[in-house]
Length: 523
Image (cartoon, rainbow, N blue to C red):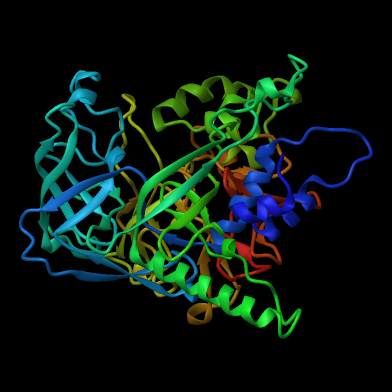
């Protein structure tokens, strides 16, 4: 069973436990609380406190055939995409890099044969002969596969790099490469060990069915991975905190209680696309050991019928599916008795989305034009083209601070032309209320782990059940009424005030927030 000292060693932040206690409250009656509530609190805290880093759990070697010599190129990238105060880190790039094995689908090998030599539906990463972008670096294409002679599995990829695509650039006239994957340069990579912790029990109430809780123990609650590869900045940070701990221990005998105690688990990361991890006390100069604190999203929630997070996922619909799913819903909203009326806040579609491109509007100095991935799919289930969104943010937020940002989009308003360009969604932003050039505007930020297209909900209300499109005059007024109640609270969290009650806007990984604007209007 988890203890406070065990949770601290694993890397659970004290702030997450305090947040958990605030959310569950106190009751005189016995009750069971979903373990996912604690995990959500951990994700929410660690999302804002943990640096980002590249870590390859199952490495596949990539050789850049047209890279000259053994020279390395350094990329300065942010430690956190939303918190500039955390600073930057240096990520080297060179002729040999490692990528995740799962980021390459071998259509010509055993896994391809098992899938009719076709990639999985929606797969956007690297394929034989295909292209993918290495995050923060270049686009590469796979030219040749070196295979294990016994298993026929790929052990190395020979690839070509395109220098003109450096740092996110798409050359004029070329199609944008949709897939983005992480990587670690081989000669500077640091090997470490990872303890992948998971839930101790397989069921919500251990022993309820059998009377013996030991029968419900999860045999995969801990798996140990050796040979994990991380970027060099992780090793530098780990050596720094281990040095600080040694210095503190040496002083402890001279001066007791000299300050706040330093723990190894104070060093935590979001290993991109893998989860949140913290340094373990067993680490030393020869080998670093990291504990997985929590996954990026709840992987157990979908198995629990009626779980709120799962309901939110199920209500994510593509553009074609929304129309079909709402034909019955419109009958309820249109009249014939008040029992089936859906309240305003649940009729709007606020979704997590990522801004892919941003630039000036050709006809209006006050407008910008963005390409936004709202998680849309075609009727065949394939990823749809990103939406075009026109916003009045010119001069308010720099373009380079927009691209790659996970934000909130209103996706079911009727498209409207803005100075000749049709806008297919609306970006939600907070404002300090000042006029003209003095106005400060911040987009609403969604945790990075939330998938594009996830339907956000209002805390304390039933899951959202949006209209296919708010296009009639009466339906458009629904958004006007909801917008009037949107504000950021004193913690910078986006909220909806309805009849005196405050409802936070929630994702599967925690609340939606502003970077710094508090107690401000949202529009």
